[in-house]
Length: 166
Image (cartoon, rainbow, N blue to C red; front, side, top):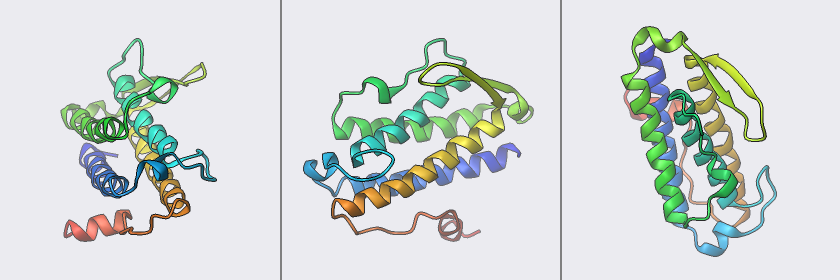
């Protein structure tokens, strides 16, 4: 994987997240909190998981001694969480953009929220977090359907590429 490809993935992630954030601004507080059947028990918890993961990887990439796992203690509003998610998406792309081409093979140490550490090449962590967000955005769609929201548009990578004229 080269830097240009990693930047493409990050740009796609921003685009897809912004689409999802648009959907979330259309639901009410009851739908946001309503119990649903999925990996996470509400739209809010699904979004919190995605935003937390995107945010913590920036900490890992910066070798932060105390990475912040938002999902463990976030108590803010829906708008605050959506702003964190949007900022984290852009922050990931900014980090990738400032990383030197040769540094995509650099080892990144990460921590698991419940303890323990792992290590992967930077490029693999980028691929992981983009795949992770895509996976959970799919769950978000299912959870949103359960709470009555159906005004979706495609957020597939192919759709993104077509819209970008590739």
